[in-house]
Length: 179
Length: 103
Image (tube, rainbow over the protein chains, first blue to last red):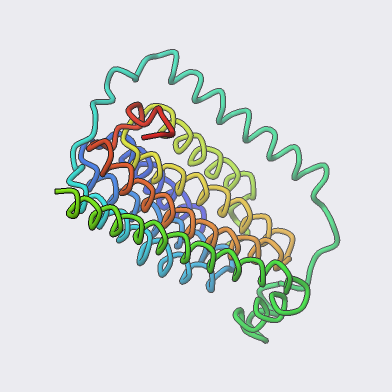
C-alpha cells in the first residue's frame, strides 16, 4: 500500500515537472508547479515530516506560486517560446544518463558512508513529544546560529526588494520631469 | 507503511526531478520559467534531505530543508523584482535579450 501510494505520487510529481517545462503558456507552467509542490508535500507526510509538509504548502504553494502568477500577469508574459525543437533523441539519452548517474552516486554514498549513529528523531519520539517541539528544540539549541543567519537573510531580501521597487518609482518620477 | 519504500526510490525521484529542473533551465528561454525550474531543483534536493532524515532518524535534514525554504523564498522575491526591473528596460522576458549588464 505504501509503495503503491509512493509510485502514484511520484508519477504525479514527475508529470507535473514535465508540465512546467513543456507548457508554452507560463500560467499553465505555474499551475503544474503547484501540483508538483503538493505532490512533494504528500511525500513529506509519508517521510515523517509533517511540519515541513505543511510549511511546503504554505511557503511554496501559498506564497511562491502566487508571486510567480502575479509577476506573469504584471508583465503580460503569458506566452513563452516553442520547445519542440529541443526534443532530440540525443538530449533524451543524455538526460536519462544524468539521472542514472545521480542515482548510482546517491545510493552508493548512502550505502557506504551515511550510516552514522541512529538519531533520536524516530516516529515514536515524534508521537510522544510532537514534531514541532522537536524541530523547534533543535533549531534553538544546536542550530541557533544558522537560524539567526536565515533571519538576517530574510531582512536583506526584504530590504533589497523594497530598494528595487524604490528605484523604479524614482525613475518614473524622473521620466515625468523630463517629459 | 513508510518502510516499505526503500530510500533509493526517493533518491531516484529526487534525481529525476532535479534533472528535469536542470533541463528546463537549459532549454527554456523564458526567465520566469527558468526561475520556476530552479525552485523545482531546490525541491528535489529537499526531498533527498528529508528522505535521509527519515532513514537516519535525525532532525538535521529537516532543519536544512527549513533553511532551504527560507533561501528559496528570498531568491524568488529578489529574482522576480530584478525581472520586473529588467522588463522595464527591455520590454521582454527572454533571457537571451539580457546580455548586457548596462541594460
